[in-house]
Image 1: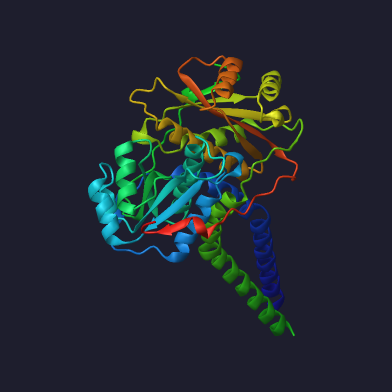
Image 2 (image 1 turned 90 degrees about the horizontal axis):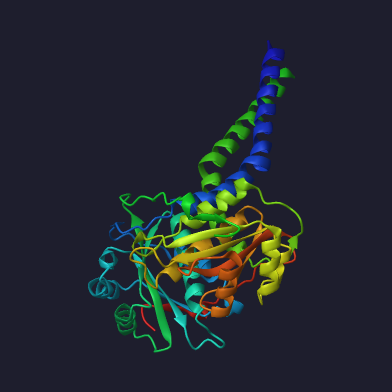
Amino acid sequence: MSKFIISILSIALLLCICYISYNELVIIPKIKQNSVLENILNRKSVRNYVKGKEVTDEQIEKILKAGMAAPSARNLQPWELIVIKDRKTLDTLAQKSPYGKMLSDASLAIVVAGNLNTEGVSDFWIQDTSAVTENILLEVESLGLGAVWIGGYPREDRANMIKETLKLPQNIEPLNIISIGYPTGKDKPKDKWNPKKIHYDKW
Amino acid sequence: MSKFIISILSIALLLCICYISYNELVIIPKIKQNSVLENILNRKSVRNYVKGKEVTDEQIEKILKAGMAAPSARNLQPWELIVIKDRKTLDTLAQKSPYGKMLSDASLAIVVAGNLNTEGVSDFWIQDTSAVTENILLEVESLGLGAVWIGGYPREDRANMIKETLKLPQNIEPLNIISIGYPTGKDKPKDKWNPKKIHYDKW
C-alpha cells in the first residue's frame, strides 16, 4: 500500500516540476511578449471615472517614467510634464476646455508640453511629445487606470487657455491635457484594424 | 521508513501546488503589468541589424495591428501604412535618406503617412500618426526586433524623396520611415529619466 502511495506522490511531484519548468521557460516569456500587444489593443479613450479615487505617487512615477522613455529627434528630449492633482485646477480646466468636461471627475491630469527653448529644437517637437503621450496612455492602461488625450496645440485658443491656467511661460507649448482616473468600465476599446490602409512597396 | 518518504513527498507536492497557485494568481498578473513598462523602458533606436534575416508575415501583422490601435483626434484614423520589403526600394531609400543609411541592412521598413484627404482631417494628423509610430516601435521591441524612427514631414526635401520613391499621391504625407531588423545587440536603451522636467499643478 505505501509503495503505491509513494509512486502516486512521486508522479504528481514530477508533473508539478515539469509544469513549473515549462511555465518559466516557455509560458512566461510568451506572456511577456503578448502582454505588450494585448495592452496596446486594450488601450481606449476613457472618459468615465470612479470619482474621488486617488492615484498613488508610485503609479504616477511609473507613468512619468514611461513618458520620458519616448524617442525624440536628435535625442533632444524637448518635453516638460505638468502633473495636476489640485482639484480646483482640474475643475478650472474642465470648465474651460471644450472637450475636457471629464476632467472634473479625473483623479489627475498630465499636460505634455514642448519646451521651445530646448537647444536645437525643431518642428519635430510635436512628434516627440506625441510619442511621450502615447507611452503615458499605454502605461496608464497597464496599471488598470484609464485616460483620454485632450488636444491642445496647434489650436491656439485651447493652448492659450492651458498656458493661462497653469501660468506656463511663452516658450512652453502644451500639446495636450491627458485626463486620468479609475475607469467605470463604460469605455471599451475600438477595433480599428483596416487592411485597406496597408500598402506594399509602393502606392 | 516509508511513512517518512510519504511525508516528505506530500510536503514537496504541497509546496509545488502553493507555488503554482501563487504564480497564477499573483506573479503572472504582476508580470503582465510590469512587462509593459519594461518594454517601454527597453525600447531603443536600433540602427545595427543582423543582415539578411527575414521578419515573418505574422510578425508584420502584429506590428501593423499595434500601429492601427493608436488613438486619433475625433477617431478619424487619418493614417496609411506602407510596408517595404523590396530590397531595391530599401536600398534606394537608404541611398537617398540623409539619416537612413541603416535601411540597406534592414529586413523591412514601414512608412507611416497621413492621408490628407481623410474627411474632417486637421493638423492633428501629425499627433495621430506619431502615436501610430510609437505603438509600432513598442511592438517591434516586444517581438525581439529593433527599429529606428527616420523623420520625414515636415522636412520638405525628405518627405518629397519618400513620395517620389514610393510614388505616393500628393495627399499622402509621409511622417517617417521606420527601419526594422534583427538587432545585433550594439544599440542600448538610454536612461532619460529627468525629474527637472516634472512640474506640479503650475509652472
